[in-house]
Structure formats: C-alpha cells, structure tokens
Image (tube, rainbow, N blue to C red; front, top):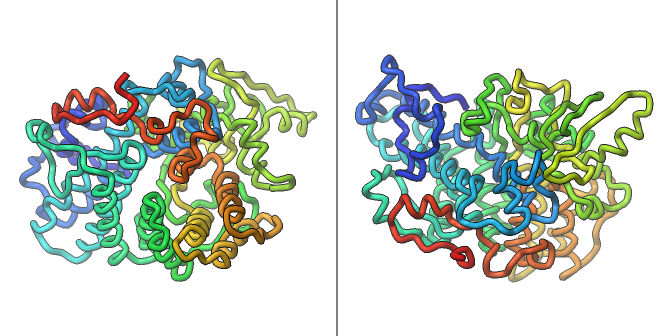
Amino acid sequence: MKMNKFYKTLSILFAGMILSVGCEDFTDIDPEFAQDADSYFNAPADYEQALVGAYDLLQTSYLSLWIGEIASDNAIAGGESVTDSEGLHQIDAMTHGGVNNELRSIFRWNYAGVTRANYIFENKDNIDFEGKDEILAQAAFLRAYYYFELVKFFGAVPLVIDRRLSPDELASVPRSPATEVYAQIEEDLTYAAGILDWTAEQKGRITKGAALALLGKAHLYQNEFAEAATVLDRVINEGPYALFQGDYNGIFRVVNEGNPEVVFDVQYTGIEGGSYDCFVCLEGFAAVGFHSIRGYNGPIYSDGNSYNLPTQELVDAFEAGDPRLEGAILDIEAFIAANPDVEITYAEGGGGHTGYYNNKYSKRLDELGPPDTDLTSPVNHIVIRYADVLLMAAEAHARKANPNEEQARQYLNQVRERVDLEPVNASGEALLNAIYQERRVELAGEGHRFFDLVRTGRAAQEIDGFQTGRHELFPIPQAEIDLARAGWQQNPGYNN
C-alpha cells in the first residue's frame, strides 16, 4: 500500500501523540511535491491516493500479532536478550505499565490510520465522481479496523470521527466508553458491507466479506452472540470462501496468497526495505524475519531474530496426530534429527529459548525479499481467515440465549474434518470448551489467543501473572496522557 510522498506531507496525525512518531516516512518534505491540505481532494485521484494512505498503516499489524501471542500462554517474547524489545518481555511477564514502547506504537499507529480515514470523510462532499462510494466504504472499514484494535487493547479511547484535530483541540477530547467506540465500529462496518462486493477488482482491497467478518467479531467481543451469529452466518452462506485444501501450512505461503480461505489480509511487497529505525516505514512483513531461527544455517529456512517463540504448553495442546502441529510450530531439534545428512546449525537467543518457532510466519529460502531480509518478507499477514469465521460462528451459536448447538457443532467439525480429526459430539459446556480448544490450535501463532482468553474470562487461569481487574486491558501510554493534557485517567491497576 505504497503512499506518495506528497500525501505523507499532508497527513495531519492525531495531535502530539502521533506527531512524535519520529519517522522520516512521515516528515520528509520535498517542495516539488508539496501541496496544501486545503487545496486537496479536488480530483478523483486525490481521494484514491488518500485511501492508499489510509491502507498504509495496516502494515503495522505485526505488532498486534506478536502481543496477542506473547501476552498469552502460547509464546514467550524471545529475542536477543531480555532488554532487546524490553516492552515485549514486560508484557510476557505481565509487568508492563504505562511506559512501554510497543504499546505506545500500537496506540500511535492505529490513531494515524484513524486520522487518515477521517481526512477522507472530512472532505467527502468536495466533489462527486463515479466510484466515490467504494472509496468511502473502504475508508469506513479501515477506520473501524483501527478503532477495533484500539478498543481491544485499551478499552475506552478518544473517539474522533470525520475530522482532524489540532493539538489545542486535543486537550478537550475525553476517552469515550468502549460501548460508544464499538457502536461507531458497527456503524462503519455496516455501511461498508452495504456497498462493497464479495470480491474486489484490485488485489488487497477490502470486500463485503471482510467487513461482515470484522462486524461479527466486534459483536462477539461484546458478548452479543445472537448478532454475531447472524452476521457470521452471512459470511458462511453468502460469501465465496472455503477452507484451504492441501498442506495446512500452505495457507500462509506466498505461492498460495489470496486462496479461498483468506477473508482479510494485509498485503506486503518485499520490494522496499525500510529500517530498524522506522518499522512503520516497512513494505515487508516484519513478523516473518523476527520469528525466524536465530543464526540458522541449513535447508528450507533462513535465519532471523527468534522472537515470539511457541511454548511447550501450546505444543501439548494439540491432539495426537493433528497435522496442524507441524504446520504451525517448527520443532528445531526434531527438524535436525529428521535431516541427518544435512548440516544444520542455529543459535539460542538470550531472551529465552523453547526449541520451537512460529512455522506459519517464518523466513523460507524461496520467499526471501531483498536485503535486509528480516524486514522485507513478501508474505502477507492473514488477519481473518475462513476457519476463524467458522469458529467464531460456532461459538456465537453455542453461547447465544437460545443456543443452536447443532449448528455450532457443524461449523466446528468443518474445521476438524479439514485435518481428518474425529467430529465433536459434545453439548453444553463441553461443546463450548471444544470450540475454545479448536480456536487455540487452529489459530496458533496468529495473534488471537490473549484476546480470546480475556473476552471469555479464562485469562487468569491460563496466564501466569495475570491479575483480574488489571490485565484485561493494556495501559494507555503515559506519554500520550501527558501530551494530550485532557485529564485521561489511566486504566485500572496501572497507576503504581
């Protein structure tokens, strides 16, 4: 989602909290391409270019994936040392507070995306042209997605719609209750789904299915199970999606990108490098290089930074014979033992070592981008896939006021049948636990686990160090509270 330099100079970010991104991608100004914001949006191409700018912040989604695993019982932070990306190690140990670089990045980057979408709506009536409704629908989805990320991490957040804020205005903007944020998310997604088609002419653009799937997920996160079931049933019954047939790990390979299981993914090009000084500038998927095997030499894989390492507990969660275990998790010592005629070496990072690596998003020799290959992976990030939709729908049907357990089992067993596992015939709490278990193994390594545990009330019993009443939400970055000067109260439990 490359964004032209002239638009980058126009993007007025969310007051001081976003202006401090500190990245040349946002601040370089070339007078040759300079354009005043008030004279923009005078041609259809301006709206299209602004939309590309709103898409651009999707490329920071890797951090949500990391934290969704590392904060849970699925993975440890890993890395070179415990002071390398210290914020991730704090989250791993449940000792994080209001000063945390990774959480601040989540906050700033998603608000940058919100602001770029708002910029389009602020100027939506400047001119009329064919195709404007599709641009506005995509912008609405993007705003909803960025707000969904913010509300699931931080709860109540400032809600700003259809306009940009000056730094002076920010001091009068309160945190809106999560219910109001979700209401806006639902409004945007309903609007987008009403306009968009099930398929998009241009690769990587938002579709009706993506909007409905995220809407169903938003209902599920609010325990609105009947509403979630209705929306997710539409995706299943009306959409063009299907479970990927073939090697389970193939879902995530470049050669199979855009396969029928993909409902919503973030596109990466693997062409432009970026740098360690500006992860928001990257065009490649950073998670792949960071997940990969430290100091690795050998076949199939390439070396990386050994972050987000799966735990033994996650490995043990898979049923005997489940092929998804090997597809999701690379057991490095077992891999070496299975290749006795090839010299394979690797190094253990000082940030922790489990012997396991995220096999869905790891560097492979046939998928390398240009140097630095840790930052230029062309692998797409699949944010929502059809198996996730089926399992969300199964949960919604099992948990709604008048449960439809037959439908829940049908959706659950579609996912199990794909990998030749026996169907589940349970009812009641046993059925619900089977759905939760299936979500853990089917979606392992994809960033859902922590948020699934929190929204279902199981986090305290599964995550070491989790404190009920505190760790359900992450703290608002203290620097943003200070910069806003709006009297925002910190989330409970983070003031000491």
